[in-house]
Length: 179
Image (cartoon, rainbow, N blue to C red; front, top):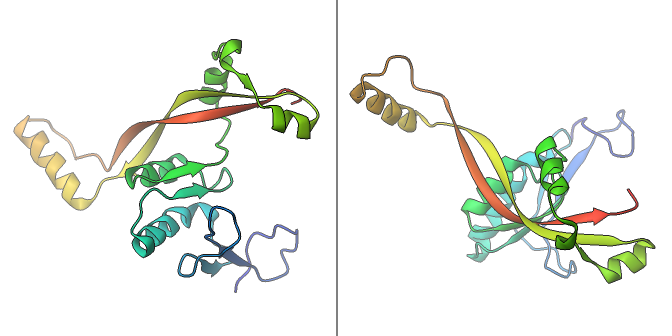
């Protein structure tokens, strides 16, 4: 155990970070799918490793990863999508997402009666495609391949260290009309 971010505002106490993998109904914690991490471990760094571990353990790739917006980073979503996994959770409210939501026609949003009833005010949802960009570090082998292509094309300069990957996901946008 080590000192880290304290959700109960106790930085003077050692922390531990527990990652749990559970069945769809949340009743059973999956053996081999859960880990204990040092208290200073960022949640975003555990998501992809947990997905890979469960994929190996159960020989399934269509696993659903849920978490908070830290765990749903563009890099994590890309890695999980490449492994044919799915994800559910909030994402950062970026200017791009604000623009996408602002351009959704009102008739595209459908009411969610049960959620609206529980909240006491209208909750609506719409489906759309969202685009994300991820800056990925190139491996040494990839850099050598890029350098060889640049040499063939007689381009000068060093090979880039990163590449930008763009991907698209189908997403549900939930609109809480009280906010």
